[in-house]
Figure 1: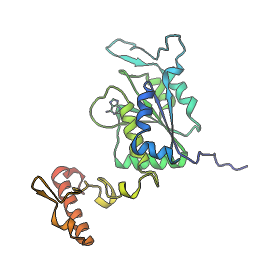
Figure 2: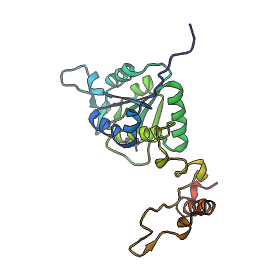
Figure 3: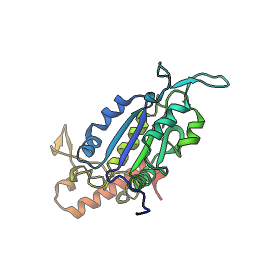
Figure 4: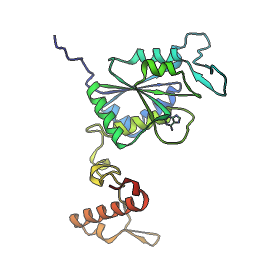
Length: 240
Ligand code: ADE
């Protein structure tokens, strides 16, 4: 028998939430939806409330020591994770404003993790927070999508899922290629350039001449120059 742990061939993103309908709707839409229909990724959406043990399906309570805001109880969260986790080494992420900030480098790291392990679990935090013991027991990474507070972890989890799925090999077609998006190697980690489509003139504004020239080397040089200039003006922090 092989000592290799069997991994799912189609990577599975598992999202644990109190709002499964909201999450499913987004995952069925646009590129994340197309990727699943094409069999490049799978999603499992789990309702944390299904793991409540009382008849009111309670998942939260007041904080020990007092203070405003409800805290998600450890038990439903821990059991929801255990119900979907296929391998002990699975990465389990809690979305929280207190986590490390999500960016391009973390996208690529998590993508690699998803490829290798075949699963990635995202737990959507809610209310004031989640009982620290759940984090100690089943979470091994905490991720924030920026320095602002949202009503819940669903949008952050969906942001992470979307950013990962569009980077899975074969998900993006030529027409929506991500190769020269902002933050990619082609853009030296900086911003993308401006883009135009038909018509060549709109309300007195013309498309830059070079883009209509058909001269590919000049076009690429112009785009690279513009991207560099944008990065310099808008995000000097991204420059080396
Ligand atoms: N939950 C609430 N706000 C959040 C944020 N900015 N990032 C991740 N999870 C959150």
